[in-house]
Image (cartoon, rainbow, N blue to C red; front, top):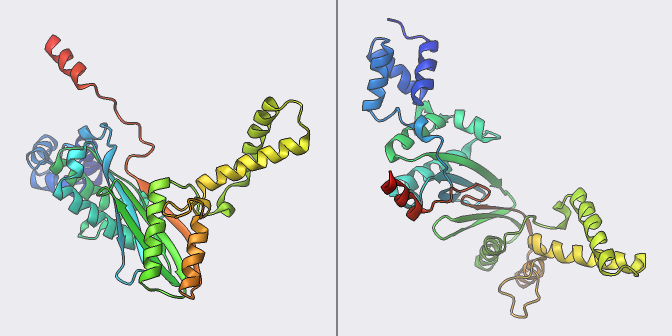
Length: 310
């Protein structure tokens, strides 16, 4: 019996297995749908769909940098438990995903998942993911990736707590030496620790600043109802400036500053001057595992009590 695309699609929807696996199963069972399902179950490939509803908020962030330091990528791959995140097979898989993402031309995750898997081009990235879900036994998700390229300098990286946080920093410079590489790593560590949202003030959306002005103006008028507009304006701008120092990497107080006052931008200028270099931190990427994902709040004592009651 000839295997049609419609049959492959139906089997995939029934089992959650990859397209190529479904085609192989149908071919091996001469188009018998029930036997094809059994075939996939026996090979552990029909379980991914059942696991897909589980919350995957653990996992790791992996950063990879090319040998010449000109190109780098950060990826986040999630799993359900921290136990699996520490599993060697899971970590090897995430490293492969990072290598795939290093060279991808895809603009988003959907396109990335549809790409041929570089380690076995007969299947897609999504199909390989389904295999790993079946093998490891937990829901997994390739959540996001970001590439940075810098021809006129290098990309620095930093990983915190074995992949809980991963940072890339784009450094444009006409001098590359150990001092400047150390500076770049320090800036990456700064981003990991203080969670900036922007590289510098120029990146901040003007609409955001205008909204903040409106909110802070009302606050200031409530605090000082008798103050004139000049005083209120001064209070508002002072508070916005303080807020920008907290969310813009270059304006943050450098965590290793001896005087507790030096900004990251001033620290970079100091290193540039000492090395007769022109240095600019153009951008950064900071990924933290599971950020923004609603995690399941599990009360294990209550769960055990519930099961005992049953």
